[in-house]
Length: 61
Image (cartoon, rainbow, N blue to C red; front, side, top):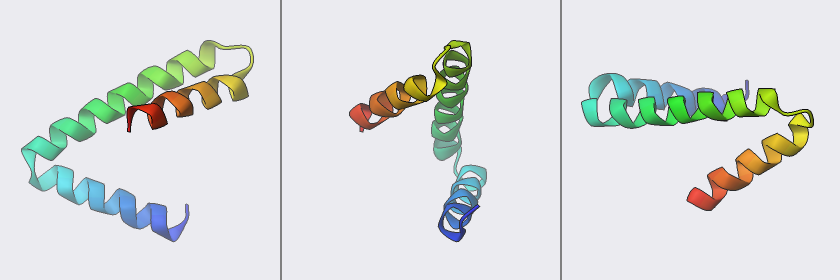
């Protein structure tokens, strides 16, 4: 894992453990990620499915 991603993940974990509101947001994002992963796993063309999931995620920003 790159250093930047490692530091980002560490920050998210620290924030989630100290702030109940942040914990709820992290939980919602994690559950959404699990749902996307399940949907991607069902597809025959997984690369295309990952692209669609990424497009949906970026559109939501």
